[in-house]
Image (tube, rainbow, N blue to C red; front, side, top):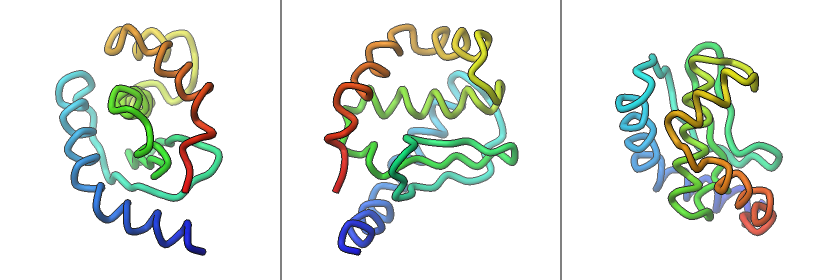
Length: 116
């Protein structure tokens, strides 16, 4: 219960910052419609993107380095164009963020430390 409360407080505080980041990255690289951006207390995913243009990011990502946060944002924005993890999707991510693999590795290696 305490973790959920902390997550809600962090989400309220950081939502303007993360929204600005997502919109800036979208404008620079994707130029897609974004319906809504939310920060949620998710445990199994760093982010998700819906067909309606809703981007959900885990509050756990706030514990990661900013470059890793950028990677997660770009990953979800890429889903606005490619709603799968095909080669085309990964090429799109790489075209925007060439060193994405090192940030993905950071998440795999350190993600378990990003929690309340």
